Image 1 (spheres, rainbow, N blue to C red):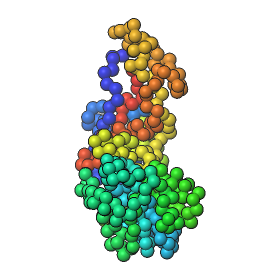
Image 2: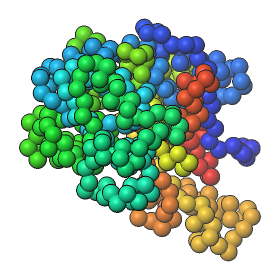
Image 3: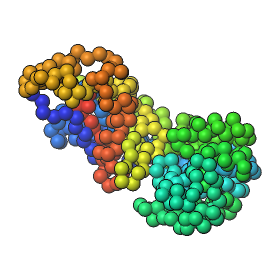
Length: 396
C-alpha cells in the first residue's frame, strides 16, 4: 500500500436552493454522490456528511410567526408584566422573537446583562464600567443611569444602539417597556415575579435560581413554541436556535431529523458499499478572538446525528511522544515507534500524560465547528459538508 500524505479533508458540497417539502435525504445523497464522481474523489467508511440546520428546518417548513409567539406568551403569562431577562443582542436571533413577546404582553421589563451579553456582544466596555465605579457583580442600573454614565454606545459590527432598538421594538407593538441592567437572574424580582429567561447556555441555572427565590411564573425561550399549536415548534428548544426569516417570521431549529439522517446513510451504503456518518449542524463552538464573540448562539452544535458520532476523541499527543517517550529516536525509527504506540493505545486515555492537551470535546462539536467554518454563513452555496479522514490517525 502506498503511503498517504493527506489527513482530514473538508469539502463544501453545492446543492440546489432548498424549499419546504423537498426530499432532503434524496437531494443530499445525490449531491454528495455527484460531487464524488465529478471531482474524482471516493467515499470511505466513516466519512461524515454534515447538513446545515438551516436547510433542514426549511425543508420541514418549521417556521413561526410573530402572532404564533404572541399567542403562546399570552397563554403562559396572561395579563402579567413579564421580566424578559438576558437576551442576546442580535437582530437576526432575537429581534423578531422580542416582537412576538411584546405583542403578547402589556408591559415588559427588559433586563440586559452588562458589560456584554452571553455570547460576548458588548453594550459597554469593561474599562468604561470600571472607570465609572460600577460593580457588575452587584450594581443594578436603570436606563437613565446607564445613559448618564455612558451615553449612546453602538455595536462595533452592526452600528446598532441595541438599548434604543430593543426598546423601540417593544413600543412599536403598543407595549410598555422598562429597561434595566443587571447580572443576576433574581434581580428582576424587584420589578416582576413573572419571568422569561432568554439566555441560551445558562438558562437552566437562571430558571432554578428564580424558582428558588419565589418567582411565580418562570419560562425560558426553550419553553415557547415547544409543542404543536398549529404552526412551527421544537419540542426540545422552542425558540432557541431560531433565526429571522422575515420581519414577522422566524425559522425554528429543526427537529425529528433521525429518519432523514439514516436514509442518507443507507443510500450512500447501497450505492458505494461505504458506511458514512451523518449529522445536522448549526453554529460552531468557537470564539472570535478579535470581536470577542462566541459563535455558539444555537443551544447545541448538532441537534441530531447518527450513532457513530457519539463520544469524544481518544487521541495521543504526538509532540508529547516525540519529546518524551521517543526523544532519542528520529526518522523512520521514530515514525514506526509512534505508529505502533497509536495502534496499541488504550480505549480510554483519560488521565494519561500522553493525551494531555488533546481536546476533550464531543465529536459533534468538533466536526460541527469545522463544518460551520467550511460552509460559511454567506453566499458559498455549500449547505452540505463532507469531512473525510477525520477518524484516521498517524498509523492509518
